[in-house]
Image 1 (spheres, rainbow, N blue to C red):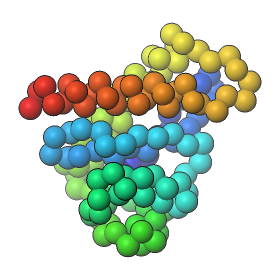
Image 2: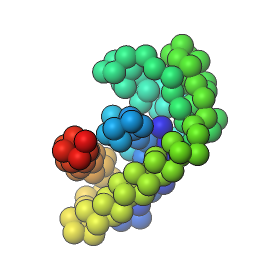
Image 3: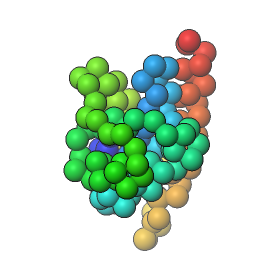
Image 4: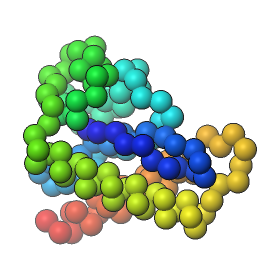
Length: 136
């Protein structure tokens, strides 16, 4: 699990959170938030736990993750260099595609809630995961 600052909608920066299955490289979940703190991390992790069950959470060392894992009674560790490179490459891929999406389909709505970006990210994740299944 990691987070990165994404240029989402013309000069709006948000933080992308993603969860990747390290063995088959499928994206389990992705979300965007304008803030990063323990409550957002806890909500993101709890959604993953509801779908995939309880597992050890491997993160990039953000201070809010250990607290969120403790609250959810999950084991936590900081990921290895292999896991880090996998997650960083995937996140950079997502960032690049999100910026291209915004270049072609810019949002001109004042007070945008980023729903169109989340919809696009969900579509992107589904296509990415289908590709990963075909490659295995």
